[in-house]
Image (cartoon, rainbow, N blue to C red; front, top):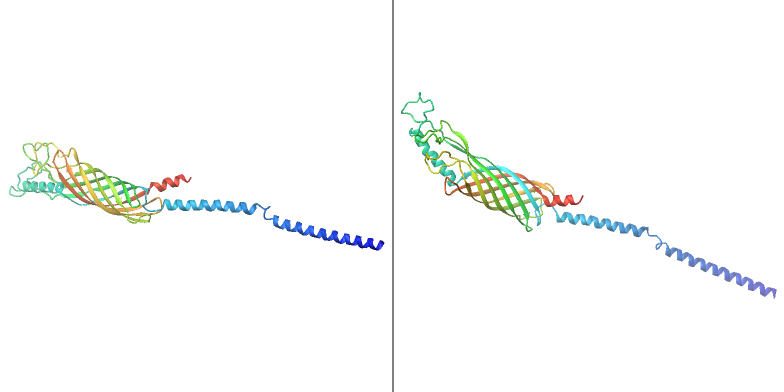
Length: 310
């Protein structure tokens, strides 16, 4: 009986040890499988990385939306200065014809230069006359251009240009009964115009640092200066000053914008203009000219976007 009891106790001990070992293995497996679920740190880090990556993408796409170069929605303001080249037209030719007639009168002493000491000039010698010179003045221009389409811009232009002449002329006022002529050429502004025109541009290569373009303009011009109604002096005119000068202007040209970044750049442009002029002194005359200009520009769309980022 005692021997049977020993075997039963030994059997119970073995069963208990087997049970405890099995429970220990189950707890160990549960602990290993539950570690990743109980650690939130890797999951939180991946979420922050995703948010940071999305922010970088937003900045990248914003740069694509507002790149250097011309694009739909761009708003460019530019200022240029330069000179007028090879002026021509009936406005210039009429004044030169007037000079030729005056030259003939001076040389043949049909007009007076009595205020000039002519004691040393023999009566058979010609009067004093000097060839006139016509000098184009400085031209300046403001452009306001909006990107209506990907390659097409619309806007307006404000421009000023002038022309001077160094010439002799009949002195008005005192030349009512007898014409008196300047002894020496005097410099005077014969034309100064201010125009505002509609602007249309075509940009064949949008979204590029080098932005060539073509332009067309049409608008109105007001002007002052000096001019003559005929090719001889009108004794009833007290002044040769142009009054009520108004007209139309059309022009075509081409240029190049060079972007030095997303916000500004430098530019150069060459244009041909034709102006149709009328005033109290004459009914209709034309003035043709070429203009070569250089300047700077700013893309206000990119500047506005940059300010919105702060």
